[in-house]
Image 1: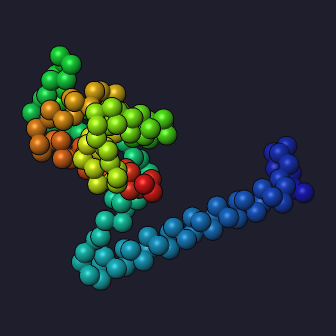
Image 2 (image 1 turned 135 degrees about the horizontal axis):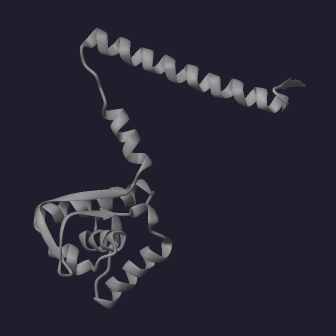
Length: 153
């Protein structure tokens, strides 16, 4: 074992460092390939980077076309915290739908299920989402759909 500034360096630590350096080298090689491809074609494809970023954060902040009123308060934006949802939230949406006499055989294609799930993610009543202008409603419910399909529903 080597000693560096009174810190004992184990073989495991050396291996971890080598792995991190290897990952960094792989990343640098990938970036170099992307740059060469961009220079060759004159096109930079950011779709993979955008998709990768979106996968990391499932939350969504919607900016309304015009401010909307929800429970007596005006909103320009509303954040949907899909990452904070639990299995209990899914079951609560299903129960709420049953109480209304509605059922979703496929939640990933059910507008009602998606809008109710979005409402739970934003901590507002589901009827508030349904009252939104159609352009806002569709964007929000589609984000809920994307969340469901991304989670394997």
